[in-house]
Amino acid sequence: MLKIQIPTPLRQYAGKQAAVEVKGSTVAEALNSLVRLHPDLKRHLYTDDGKLRAFVNVYVNDEDIRYLEKEATQLKENDNISIVPSIAGGSREAGMNSRSARTLIRQMICPTVCCPACCCCQ
Amino acid sequence: MNSAQPGAEPAASPITCVLMLKIYQPLHDSLRRHSEETYPHECCGVLLGQIADGGRVVTSIARCGNTRDDSPRNRYHIDPRELIRIQREGRDRGEDIVGFYHSHPDHPPHWSQTDFAEAHWYGCSYVITSVVQGKAQATRSFELTGNDETEKRFVDESIEVAPEPMGRMP
Ligand SMILES: [Zn+2]
Image 1 (tube, helix red, strand yellow):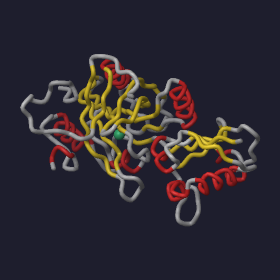
Image 2 (cartoon, rainbow over the protein chains, first blue to last red):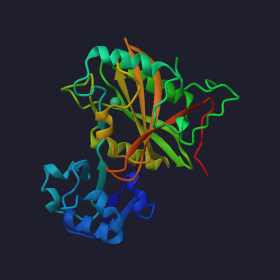
Image 3 (cartoon, chains in turn blue, green):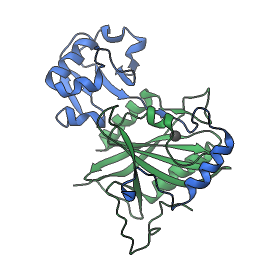
Image 4 (cartoon, helix red, strand yellow):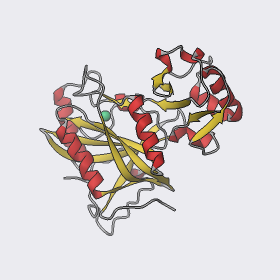
């Protein structure tokens, strides 16, 4: 049996499980087996034209499948597959200069400033 | 200065936030210290604990390296391999990944468009500490709500800094 590790945000579509056991001799087969068991996962992993989403990293043991044979990567018994959405970001907006950044800092450090989307403000 | 401190709100305040991140004081101190240590570069790390009704409880944090050597002052990226290891070690202790933290050197503690575009862990907290001239300023947290890329949204959540360690939620 192969084990696929499910990241926190996707567990609600995988019966709340942290890991799902599947069968398959390639990554594509293992992922197919996963979405057959849990069809709600499909749109979170694949785009409408059936490609793995760009921010969805798939690792076999500790290797990124992009640097192996991608979805054709062969699997061995007891391989551990991990689905890992990427974690990235950064402070600087495109085109923000340091003066507008300073103004923003002043605004944001002030505790009375609340984000308009915040539940506190509604 | 730090609006996340407990007791910062007036007692009679009618403001109640539904979303909340609860974190043990030394862990909160540690992620803020991390942001000062890496200044003027961005720091980043993972929050582990439990997701409970209406919020997340952080029972440990894991510091990560920032892989964005090309632009470490205003970009961060966590190596998925490091994340897999942290996830595995967390699970051995009964903890799940409940969020992430990073710093904004000389920028406000508010999510940027880059942060938003690159955020994909729905239901998790994204904690941001502003660092000005090497000193940690405000720390804020945002939950990435919604269930997919089209409906996702960052929503302000309050940080409750707990003076006592918190065990596993029942
Ligand atoms: Zn950021």
